[in-house]
Length: 355
Image (cartoon, rainbow, N blue to C red):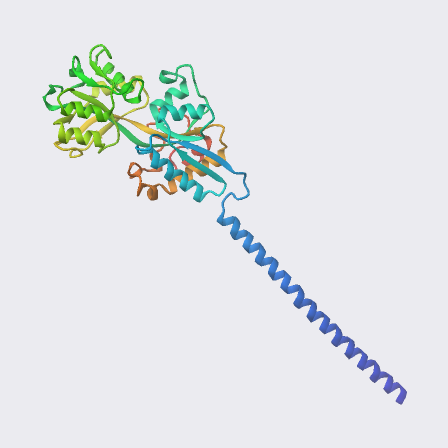
Protein backbone atom coordinates (compact mmCIF):
# COMPACT_ATOMS: atom_id res chain seq x y z
CA UNK A 1 0.00 0.00 0.00
CA UNK A 2 2.80 2.38 0.92
CA UNK A 3 4.62 1.42 -2.25
CA UNK A 4 1.49 2.15 -4.26
CA UNK A 5 1.09 5.54 -2.59
CA UNK A 6 4.70 6.43 -3.25
CA UNK A 7 4.26 5.38 -6.84
CA UNK A 8 1.20 7.58 -7.23
CA UNK A 9 2.96 10.60 -5.68
CA UNK A 10 5.95 10.16 -7.95
CA UNK A 11 3.70 9.85 -10.97
CA UNK A 12 1.77 12.98 -9.89
CA UNK A 13 4.98 14.95 -9.44
CA UNK A 14 6.23 13.88 -12.87
CA UNK A 15 2.93 14.86 -14.45
CA UNK A 16 3.06 18.26 -12.78
CA UNK A 17 6.63 18.86 -13.89
CA UNK A 18 5.78 17.76 -17.41
CA UNK A 19 2.71 20.02 -17.52
CA UNK A 20 4.72 22.97 -16.28
CA UNK A 21 7.38 22.31 -18.85
CA UNK A 22 4.80 22.06 -21.58
CA UNK A 23 3.13 25.26 -20.39
CA UNK A 24 6.43 27.07 -20.42
CA UNK A 25 7.21 25.84 -23.91
CA UNK A 26 3.78 26.79 -25.10
CA UNK A 27 4.08 30.27 -23.63
CA UNK A 28 7.50 30.76 -25.14
CA UNK A 29 6.37 29.56 -28.55
CA UNK A 30 3.37 31.87 -28.48
CA UNK A 31 5.49 34.88 -27.58
CA UNK A 32 8.12 34.29 -30.24
CA UNK A 33 5.49 33.51 -32.92
CA UNK A 34 3.52 36.62 -32.10
CA UNK A 35 6.44 39.01 -32.72
CA UNK A 36 7.13 37.84 -36.30
CA UNK A 37 3.39 37.95 -37.00
CA UNK A 38 3.27 41.60 -35.88
CA UNK A 39 6.36 42.49 -37.92
CA UNK A 40 4.82 40.85 -40.97
CA UNK A 41 1.62 42.88 -40.57
CA UNK A 42 3.61 46.08 -40.15
CA UNK A 43 5.58 45.27 -43.28
CA UNK A 44 2.37 44.73 -45.23
CA UNK A 45 0.94 48.03 -43.95
CA UNK A 46 4.13 49.87 -44.89
CA UNK A 47 4.06 48.33 -48.34
CA UNK A 48 0.44 49.31 -48.80
CA UNK A 49 1.17 52.89 -47.74
CA UNK A 50 4.11 53.09 -50.10
CA UNK A 51 1.99 51.79 -52.97
CA UNK A 52 -0.80 54.24 -52.14
CA UNK A 53 1.62 57.15 -51.98
CA UNK A 54 3.21 56.34 -55.32
CA UNK A 55 0.44 55.74 -57.84
CA UNK A 56 1.60 53.49 -60.61
CA UNK A 57 4.90 52.65 -58.84
CA UNK A 58 4.68 49.15 -60.28
CA UNK A 59 4.16 50.46 -63.81
CA UNK A 60 6.88 50.97 -66.34
CA UNK A 61 8.07 54.58 -66.60
CA UNK A 62 6.37 56.63 -69.32
CA UNK A 63 8.55 59.41 -70.75
CA UNK A 64 6.73 62.43 -72.15
CA UNK A 65 8.34 65.23 -74.13
CA UNK A 66 6.12 68.35 -74.12
CA UNK A 67 7.25 71.12 -76.54
CA UNK A 68 5.52 74.47 -75.98
CA UNK A 69 6.51 77.73 -77.75
CA UNK A 70 8.91 80.63 -77.30
CA UNK A 71 10.07 81.27 -73.74
CA UNK A 72 8.42 84.72 -73.81
CA UNK A 73 4.92 83.40 -74.52
CA UNK A 74 2.14 81.95 -72.35
CA UNK A 75 2.61 78.36 -73.49
CA UNK A 76 6.12 77.98 -72.10
CA UNK A 77 5.22 78.43 -68.41
CA UNK A 78 1.94 76.59 -68.98
CA UNK A 79 3.77 73.51 -70.25
CA UNK A 80 6.11 73.64 -67.26
CA UNK A 81 3.16 73.78 -64.86
CA UNK A 82 1.37 70.85 -66.49
CA UNK A 83 4.42 68.59 -66.60
CA UNK A 84 5.21 69.45 -62.98
CA UNK A 85 1.73 68.35 -61.91
CA UNK A 86 2.02 65.09 -63.83
CA UNK A 87 5.45 64.34 -62.40
CA UNK A 88 4.25 65.10 -58.87
CA UNK A 89 0.94 63.26 -58.99
CA UNK A 90 1.76 60.28 -61.22
CA UNK A 91 4.67 58.19 -59.97
CA UNK A 92 5.29 56.43 -63.28
CA UNK A 93 5.31 59.56 -65.50
CA UNK A 94 8.49 61.44 -66.34
CA UNK A 95 7.44 64.55 -68.30
CA UNK A 96 9.66 67.37 -69.50
CA UNK A 97 8.62 70.63 -71.17
CA UNK A 98 10.80 72.63 -73.53
CA UNK A 99 10.70 75.69 -75.76
CA UNK A 100 9.76 75.23 -79.41
CA UNK A 101 8.77 77.07 -82.57
CA UNK A 102 5.10 76.96 -81.57
CA UNK A 103 2.03 75.07 -82.77
CA UNK A 104 3.12 73.97 -86.25
CA UNK A 105 6.50 72.89 -84.91
CA UNK A 106 4.81 71.01 -82.05
CA UNK A 107 2.58 69.08 -84.44
CA UNK A 108 5.53 68.17 -86.63
CA UNK A 109 7.41 66.91 -83.56
CA UNK A 110 4.41 64.76 -82.64
CA UNK A 111 4.22 63.31 -86.16
CA UNK A 112 7.95 62.58 -86.05
CA UNK A 113 7.52 60.83 -82.66
CA UNK A 114 9.82 63.33 -80.97
CA UNK A 115 6.98 64.61 -78.76
CA UNK A 116 4.17 62.80 -76.96
CA UNK A 117 2.04 65.72 -75.73
CA UNK A 118 1.81 69.38 -76.76
CA UNK A 119 -0.51 72.32 -77.49
CA UNK A 120 -1.58 74.15 -80.67
CA UNK A 121 -4.60 76.01 -82.02
CA UNK A 122 -7.35 73.72 -83.28
CA UNK A 123 -7.00 74.94 -86.88
CA UNK A 124 -3.39 73.75 -87.04
CA UNK A 125 -4.43 70.51 -85.34
CA UNK A 126 -7.17 69.94 -87.91
CA UNK A 127 -4.81 70.51 -90.83
CA UNK A 128 -2.23 68.15 -89.32
CA UNK A 129 -4.83 65.42 -88.77
CA UNK A 130 -6.28 65.78 -92.27
CA UNK A 131 -3.05 66.54 -94.15
CA UNK A 132 -4.34 69.85 -95.52
CA UNK A 133 -3.27 73.50 -95.55
CA UNK A 134 0.08 73.97 -93.84
CA UNK A 135 0.37 70.18 -93.52
CA UNK A 136 -0.57 69.35 -97.11
CA UNK A 137 0.58 65.81 -97.88
CA UNK A 138 1.69 65.14 -94.26
CA UNK A 139 -1.42 63.64 -92.69
CA UNK A 140 -0.98 62.48 -89.09
CA UNK A 141 -3.71 59.91 -88.44
CA UNK A 142 -2.32 59.24 -84.95
CA UNK A 143 -3.27 62.73 -83.73
CA UNK A 144 -5.59 62.61 -80.71
CA UNK A 145 -7.09 65.28 -78.41
CA UNK A 146 -6.58 65.32 -74.64
CA UNK A 147 -8.48 68.56 -73.98
CA UNK A 148 -9.78 71.72 -75.57
CA UNK A 149 -8.41 74.53 -73.40
CA UNK A 150 -8.90 78.29 -73.76
CA UNK A 151 -9.89 80.46 -76.73
CA UNK A 152 -7.40 82.49 -78.76
CA UNK A 153 -9.41 85.40 -80.20
CA UNK A 154 -8.70 87.28 -83.42
CA UNK A 155 -8.22 90.99 -82.70
CA UNK A 156 -8.24 93.27 -85.74
CA UNK A 157 -6.64 96.52 -84.61
CA UNK A 158 -6.90 99.64 -86.80
CA UNK A 159 -6.09 103.32 -86.27
CA UNK A 160 -9.03 105.60 -85.58
CA UNK A 161 -8.25 107.82 -88.59
CA UNK A 162 -7.90 104.91 -91.06
CA UNK A 163 -11.62 105.01 -91.98
CA UNK A 164 -11.73 101.24 -91.53
CA UNK A 165 -14.98 100.03 -89.94
CA UNK A 166 -15.34 96.56 -91.47
CA UNK A 167 -12.99 93.92 -92.84
CA UNK A 168 -14.00 94.88 -96.38
CA UNK A 169 -12.79 98.44 -95.69
CA UNK A 170 -9.19 97.13 -95.44
CA UNK A 171 -9.11 96.97 -99.24
CA UNK A 172 -6.31 99.21 -100.51
CA UNK A 173 -5.04 99.92 -96.97
CA UNK A 174 -1.61 99.37 -95.48
CA UNK A 175 -2.05 96.38 -93.17
CA UNK A 176 0.15 93.97 -91.16
CA UNK A 177 -1.14 90.43 -91.66
CA UNK A 178 1.55 88.52 -89.76
CA UNK A 179 4.74 86.73 -90.74
CA UNK A 180 4.67 84.66 -93.93
CA UNK A 181 3.34 81.17 -93.22
CA UNK A 182 2.34 82.01 -89.65
CA UNK A 183 -0.98 81.19 -88.00
CA UNK A 184 -1.70 84.93 -87.91
CA UNK A 185 -1.29 85.27 -91.67
CA UNK A 186 -3.56 82.27 -92.13
CA UNK A 187 -6.23 84.01 -90.06
CA UNK A 188 -5.85 87.20 -92.12
CA UNK A 189 -6.22 85.27 -95.36
CA UNK A 190 -9.31 83.32 -94.21
CA UNK A 191 -11.15 86.34 -92.83
CA UNK A 192 -10.42 88.78 -95.65
CA UNK A 193 -11.45 86.16 -98.20
CA UNK A 194 -14.72 85.57 -96.32
CA UNK A 195 -15.25 89.35 -96.38
CA UNK A 196 -15.00 89.35 -100.19
CA UNK A 197 -11.40 90.53 -100.65
CA UNK A 198 -8.70 88.85 -102.70
CA UNK A 199 -5.78 88.15 -100.41
CA UNK A 200 -3.12 89.49 -100.67
CA UNK A 201 -3.72 91.42 -103.90
CA UNK A 202 -6.39 93.77 -102.52
CA UNK A 203 -4.28 94.88 -99.55
CA UNK A 204 -0.90 96.58 -99.09
CA UNK A 205 0.52 93.83 -96.94
CA UNK A 206 3.28 94.03 -94.34
CA UNK A 207 4.46 90.63 -93.11
CA UNK A 208 5.66 91.75 -89.71
CA UNK A 209 5.09 90.87 -86.07
CA UNK A 210 2.92 92.53 -83.42
CA UNK A 211 5.57 94.77 -81.86
CA UNK A 212 6.79 96.25 -85.13
CA UNK A 213 3.20 96.68 -86.34
CA UNK A 214 2.27 98.74 -83.27
CA UNK A 215 5.37 100.93 -83.75
CA UNK A 216 4.38 101.61 -87.36
CA UNK A 217 0.77 102.38 -86.36
CA UNK A 218 2.00 104.82 -83.74
CA UNK A 219 4.17 106.52 -86.39
CA UNK A 220 1.21 106.62 -88.82
CA UNK A 221 2.96 104.27 -91.25
CA UNK A 222 0.36 101.53 -90.96
CA UNK A 223 -3.45 101.47 -90.94
CA UNK A 224 -3.92 98.29 -88.97
CA UNK A 225 -2.72 94.86 -87.91
CA UNK A 226 -4.05 91.37 -87.30
CA UNK A 227 -3.30 90.15 -83.80
CA UNK A 228 -4.24 86.70 -82.59
CA UNK A 229 -3.69 86.52 -78.85
CA UNK A 230 -5.45 86.29 -75.50
CA UNK A 231 -7.48 89.15 -74.09
CA UNK A 232 -5.43 91.92 -72.54
CA UNK A 233 -2.56 91.24 -74.94
CA UNK A 234 0.20 93.82 -74.47
CA UNK A 235 0.42 94.71 -78.19
CA UNK A 236 -3.32 95.42 -78.42
CA UNK A 237 -3.19 97.33 -75.14
CA UNK A 238 -0.30 99.45 -76.40
CA UNK A 239 -1.97 100.11 -79.74
CA UNK A 240 -5.17 101.24 -78.02
CA UNK A 241 -3.38 103.50 -75.56
CA UNK A 242 -0.55 104.95 -77.67
CA UNK A 243 -1.62 104.65 -81.32
CA UNK A 244 -5.25 105.80 -81.02
CA UNK A 245 -6.36 102.37 -82.26
CA UNK A 246 -9.66 100.52 -82.05
CA UNK A 247 -10.73 96.90 -82.53
CA UNK A 248 -13.05 95.95 -85.39
CA UNK A 249 -16.16 93.87 -84.90
CA UNK A 250 -16.62 91.02 -87.36
CA UNK A 251 -20.18 90.76 -88.64
CA UNK A 252 -22.37 87.67 -88.50
CA UNK A 253 -22.29 87.08 -92.26
CA UNK A 254 -18.50 86.79 -92.34
CA UNK A 255 -18.48 84.53 -89.29
CA UNK A 256 -21.15 82.28 -90.84
CA UNK A 257 -19.07 81.91 -94.03
CA UNK A 258 -16.00 81.04 -91.99
CA UNK A 259 -17.82 78.45 -89.90
CA UNK A 260 -19.32 76.89 -93.00
CA UNK A 261 -15.89 76.37 -94.52
CA UNK A 262 -13.74 75.81 -91.43
CA UNK A 263 -14.91 73.68 -88.47
CA UNK A 264 -12.68 75.34 -85.88
CA UNK A 265 -14.13 78.86 -85.62
CA UNK A 266 -16.21 79.98 -82.64
CA UNK A 267 -18.01 83.29 -82.21
CA UNK A 268 -16.34 85.25 -79.42
CA UNK A 269 -17.03 88.46 -77.50
CA UNK A 270 -14.36 90.86 -76.27
CA UNK A 271 -16.10 92.49 -73.28
CA UNK A 272 -16.43 96.28 -73.10
CA UNK A 273 -13.63 97.86 -71.10
CA UNK A 274 -11.04 95.23 -71.99
CA UNK A 275 -8.95 97.94 -73.67
CA UNK A 276 -8.60 101.71 -73.33
CA UNK A 277 -11.40 103.55 -75.10
CA UNK A 278 -13.44 100.37 -75.71
CA UNK A 279 -16.94 101.34 -74.61
CA UNK A 280 -18.86 98.40 -76.06
CA UNK A 281 -18.55 94.66 -76.62
CA UNK A 282 -16.65 93.58 -79.74
CA UNK A 283 -17.75 90.53 -81.73
CA UNK A 284 -14.97 88.51 -83.28
CA UNK A 285 -13.90 84.92 -83.91
CA UNK A 286 -11.72 82.69 -81.81
CA UNK A 287 -9.95 79.38 -82.12
CA UNK A 288 -9.54 77.03 -79.22
CA UNK A 289 -6.15 75.96 -77.98
CA UNK A 290 -5.93 72.16 -77.88
CA UNK A 291 -3.75 69.88 -75.78
CA UNK A 292 -3.05 66.80 -77.85
CA UNK A 293 -1.19 63.51 -77.90
CA UNK A 294 -0.62 60.47 -80.10
CA UNK A 295 -2.81 57.40 -80.44
CA UNK A 296 0.32 55.38 -79.68
CA UNK A 297 0.27 56.50 -76.03
CA UNK A 298 -1.71 53.90 -74.07
CA UNK A 299 -5.25 54.48 -72.83
CA UNK A 300 -4.55 54.18 -69.09
CA UNK A 301 -1.74 56.73 -69.23
CA UNK A 302 -3.79 59.30 -71.16
CA UNK A 303 -6.72 58.75 -68.79
CA UNK A 304 -4.41 59.55 -65.86
CA UNK A 305 -2.95 62.60 -67.65
CA UNK A 306 -6.41 63.95 -68.43
CA UNK A 307 -7.88 63.33 -64.99
CA UNK A 308 -4.84 64.74 -63.18
CA UNK A 309 -4.80 67.86 -65.36
CA UNK A 310 -8.43 68.73 -64.62
CA UNK A 311 -8.19 67.90 -60.93
CA UNK A 312 -5.34 70.42 -60.62
CA UNK A 313 -6.39 73.07 -63.16
CA UNK A 314 -7.50 75.63 -60.56
CA UNK A 315 -4.18 75.39 -58.76
CA UNK A 316 -2.25 75.82 -62.02
CA UNK A 317 -4.46 78.80 -62.92
CA UNK A 318 -3.01 80.72 -59.97
CA UNK A 319 0.19 81.22 -61.97
CA UNK A 320 -1.21 80.69 -65.49
CA UNK A 321 -4.08 83.10 -66.10
CA UNK A 322 -5.07 81.46 -69.41
CA UNK A 323 -6.44 78.53 -67.38
CA UNK A 324 -8.74 80.63 -65.18
CA UNK A 325 -12.36 79.61 -65.38
CA UNK A 326 -11.76 76.50 -67.48
CA UNK A 327 -14.13 73.59 -66.88
CA UNK A 328 -13.61 69.98 -67.87
CA UNK A 329 -17.16 69.85 -69.25
CA UNK A 330 -16.16 72.39 -71.93
CA UNK A 331 -13.03 70.51 -72.99
CA UNK A 332 -14.85 68.69 -75.80
CA UNK A 333 -16.45 71.83 -77.31
CA UNK A 334 -15.19 73.75 -80.36
CA UNK A 335 -12.37 71.30 -81.10
CA UNK A 336 -13.05 71.09 -84.85
CA UNK A 337 -14.54 67.58 -84.65
CA UNK A 338 -11.08 66.20 -83.93
CA UNK A 339 -10.89 62.70 -82.36
CA UNK A 340 -10.45 62.33 -78.62
CA UNK A 341 -7.90 59.85 -77.34
CA UNK A 342 -9.66 56.81 -75.85
CA UNK A 343 -8.12 57.58 -72.46
CA UNK A 344 -9.40 61.16 -72.50
CA UNK A 345 -12.81 60.01 -73.74
CA UNK A 346 -13.05 57.59 -70.80
CA UNK A 347 -12.56 60.48 -68.36
CA UNK A 348 -15.07 62.77 -70.10
CA UNK A 349 -17.65 59.96 -70.05
CA UNK A 350 -17.10 59.54 -66.32
CA UNK A 351 -17.89 63.21 -65.64
CA UNK A 352 -20.81 63.30 -68.08
CA UNK A 353 -19.21 65.61 -70.66
CA UNK A 354 -19.87 63.06 -73.41
CA UNK A 355 -22.09 59.99 -73.68
